[in-house]
Length: 312
Length: 250
Image 1 (cartoon, chains in turn red, brown):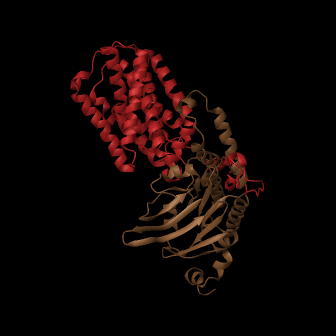
Image 2 (cartoon, each protein chain N blue to C red):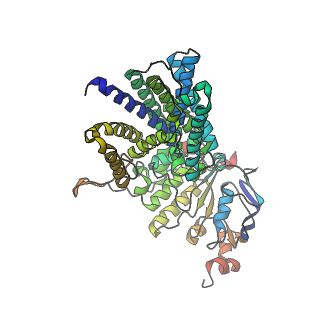
Image 3 (cartoon, chains in turn yellow, red):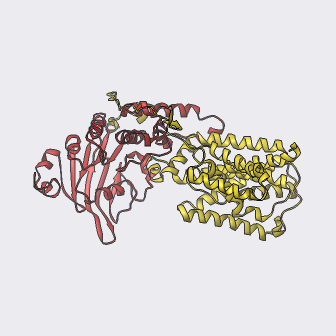
């Protein structure tokens, strides 16, 4: 395959990576959003309107599109704050569909005829830069104070609350940061496709990103990255099987879900024993027994010498 | 008084789980709440920690009413707790579990993380969490996931996590529940060290050995009502307590 034939595949792979990284950050606080494509659509439409109707340059339009998507993300977080599980997912789905219906009926942005006439600004390098930005944001957030707080909320909201983590704050922030990343992806994509239609805001597009995330594993940053790259490239690699490729694609996903329900890449216990065909590759490391320390309670950790509270 | 519970009543439909219970915990005091299964201990606990709203009565922490205050605010006010069925964050290692409780005591935001301005704060948080894990005796296992650790060590991590909150009051919900004797002894020893360190403790406990050894004062509840209150020696001799809780064979 020549590079010219490969370039669209590369661009779509990179764009999918951006979207799924945004979804990864959004899902970090335990709320799996089904409105990723709708948030991307907000970014796409925003950047299209700003460049075409207001004559903005590409870069500020993308930044503004990210900001708007972040705000829409926060709105979604606020709406779903008290919800859990099934109801929550249905609500994010309905939120996305509502945005699609809005786009259908809003003539200013083209309505059902789509928004056309967007300038071609996106090259492979734009996508490389956007992916690098998305990776950087996701990576820095992943290891940050709020990133850990978000994962604590995902693991156990009640325990996280009892440890002083504000669930509302954490969920608002993950939806804002994730929304900004997804919106950036949507804006960049808009300037490559040159047309945005309301159909692209629908659930079935969002579902792709959810599959990438769950396939790769949502516990670490590398899961969604791996999932998006492999599952965008896989249909291309299976092209030789022609009409069977979608069946194979489905089969591979089903096998992964059955064999690795937490996704391909997960966090593993550090002391675990690794075996290959019955041979121990790395033996399990024993757990150290509790040591009977008699040092005073660490003062630094409690802010004041414990027990002097009464003297305050 | 650091914690004051007055005439607290909690109903579930027709069932009165907690009926006009009052008690108080002074600073640096170790108070235990005991009672047979189903006596209302856990309900009382959940009301104090803000998970349930009572029908009547008041809970004051540090002079302020806690009713309607969100659990994370109570935690930030200095109310630390552990859970009867240990609730560590399953996908975070021991060290990260403890670091979570520093969230409310630190302030780096998203922008700080993106601009690498959170490094000093992060280093301090790690140091504090490591010191606490060393103190509870599981420092060597700090990179282990909770599922790898024995039950007793999980409880130690949970206590370290609650301490990282800088609690003024530490509430332990059946800290030795489900433990083999050796593990339970380790945790009892730990409670003793907390007490010696001057930590104010509210203990909900089943195990009378723990309660008698550690408490300054014991509150006994049965069928949702307070039936006795006093120092361990007094409670041990109280005929109502013996009848309700310790059993007649004693």
